[in-house]
Image (cartoon, rainbow, N blue to C red):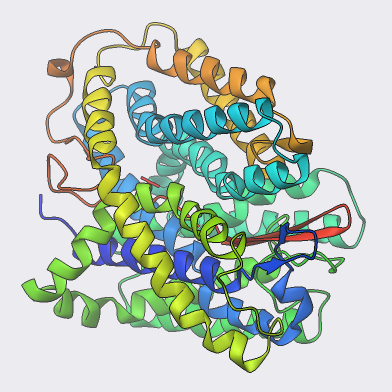
Length: 471
């Protein structure tokens, strides 16, 4: 099967915007007592909230993910593959690199807590290293639901994302107008599930005509403008701590409209983009970024911490007034330094990536699932643990938190141990996937792994965290 280069391009574009946006809004300030704070840029300079219209590209992650997952599941089911085995394989592609990252971070947190690092500093660092995890539980749930969602797609087509959107809007009305607790949680699956489901439709040609593409782009943009201009929703497409209504926590009707508009625009640009990507020189520049997507997603905040220690704790970094013209001018060398550190980190992590790929191949035997209930419970445990880290970080209140670590370890173990058989039992036509950088074992479109910016206020201090968001 020929690899769809446009899907890989969407992933590479999304990752670059995620990382760039996250780094751009992360402004560090050295306090008189020697500590470092990260003021909330979007709340301090309100005009910067308009920038989120360009950096909020989470719909592209889910659109590309649905496109790739739909094809993967269709090939698997056509070969009489077992649904539980397919879901387990998709989950492992996320859980193995996530487990390696989380294990190293937790080890560092435990050591720092043991030697008496300031709890406030440790809490900030632990949260910055875990905030991107919000995307993983949502994507794990959609992956687990893919067989059912694809069956609905085959029967009802475009009516499925329409129905999901309607239910999402109703849930949002109950959340915003009636202040109904917990109802909005379903919108994490419904709102992000709409572009995921549209990925199925795109792959099967239901969105090929330009008329629906134009209708989505124009209609979604008009609905977003109306909801922001005349409704209760803010323009910012990420969470800002001083807002009473958010577009991301939970995802709102305005976010849904933006997702539809972005999907329509993406489809309109697809023919021209595919012609451009057919050139080998262009493709060679895109492919490495897509291949390293999970590594970039998980590790892109580490360079911020490295440079914070190297430049701010040592008083080497110049500090003009926060948000002033010179401050913005210094964003350029800041981004260049971060990019250099990240490239070095990716190269340093290559042996780990190769080890993860081998671990995936060893733990992915695709024989019958012996204990599907235990495997399902394992997924639920991982979802809960990842959501906990996304909200509180790895060092809540400046302490090592053993419960989510144990829950994630138990859940991942149940997923790994849920299957028997060998890789030879795998239905033909479903290839292996590289978990880090490098070339997949078989060419096929694979979905992205990643993010949006999130900002959370803890106590009296505002912490800015970045454009968050898989394979």
